[in-house]
Amino acid sequence: MPTELEELVGFLGSPRPEVRQIALEHLVGYSQGPQNSIFKPEGLKPIKNLKVLVNDIAPRAKNALKILINLSSDPPILASLAADTPFLETLLTQITNLSNPNADLVSMLLANLAKSDSVQSLIALTRPLPAKEVSTSDNAMDQLLDLFVRGADKKLNEEACFDFLSYFFADVSRLVKGREYFVGRRGYDGVVPISKVIVFTECGSLVRRKGVASAIKNSCFDIPSHRTFLAEDGINLLPYILLPIMGPEEYPEDEMLEMPPEVQLLPPDKERESDKDIIVTHLETILLLTTTREAREYLRRVNVYCIIREVHKLVEDESVEEACDRIVQVLMRDEEPEEKIKESEGEEDRDDDAIVEIL
Image 1 (cartoon, one colour):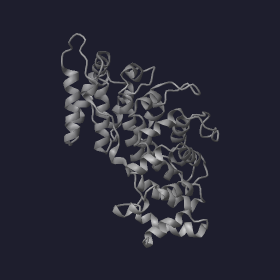
Image 2 (tube, helix red, strand yellow):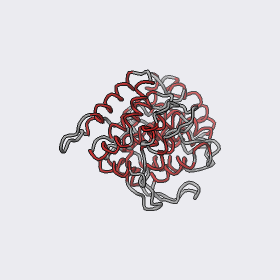
Image 3 (tube, helix red, strand yellow):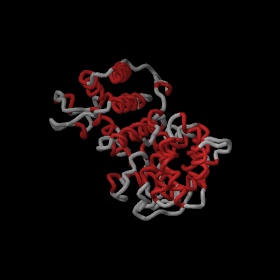
Image 4 (spheres, one colour):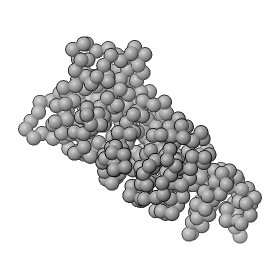
């Protein structure tokens, strides 16, 4: 005979709304830990029911989303969710609905689903246009990126800030097709997507800063794009990854005047990024930018070494110190003809520690 919990899981498919609501309310707490096995019988019928319940009224959809967020760390369930294009379309419809109070939960679920390579289907997915405030593109990735940018700080949806989409972008950008998306100019607005996210490297949200830092780093594995990344009349990435790692330290005038204008004469109350992992990510991005000789020579001209020197001196963290040492070794050594740093000097950020769970 089925246990009481198994019977409760079976009620997720009940035609009676009040029964579904009671089941959802009681089952959220069982969606974490070993007891979540009740959601994984052969055929994953409870998962199929939960997918349907995402379209239920907001209170019931909220609990269905919470359960799916917690269960999406399970590989078979993750595969079932991420490969289901109609379900992904449902999530896109939900998140671009500016009156949806559960939009941030959808962001969290998408962030978890991006752990699966199957989610790259969204890169080329064409779908109906959302509200004009969201995006003027019919491409799913464009819509999510525009929503992330325009909807920051609850500017579009008073119930959602979309910060967890940064984790989604971080994991999508670890894929070749994902990187191609972020470094390629989009036809509908003429903008390179990565240039839209770099402005958030010093925003107030830790989640947003962390995801953006990883997306930037992963995009820098596209070596042919480095010239555009560094060009002042291109993406001009360098100031956006230097400013977070800099504090109120002062530099001799001869050193400072060679630095990018954006990082000169910083105020005495300038604060350095507080999260050491984000600092390390930015340092690893700088290391990736030393891959070509042209880029290394540029980084030397703008005195990146001087900034790294101060970070090494002032930030007490072993990982930060090691990352600084690697950059210094590259920038301070003599060049050899056709010398080149191997791409394998770094690894894509998978944000494996960023699996979202709802307690």
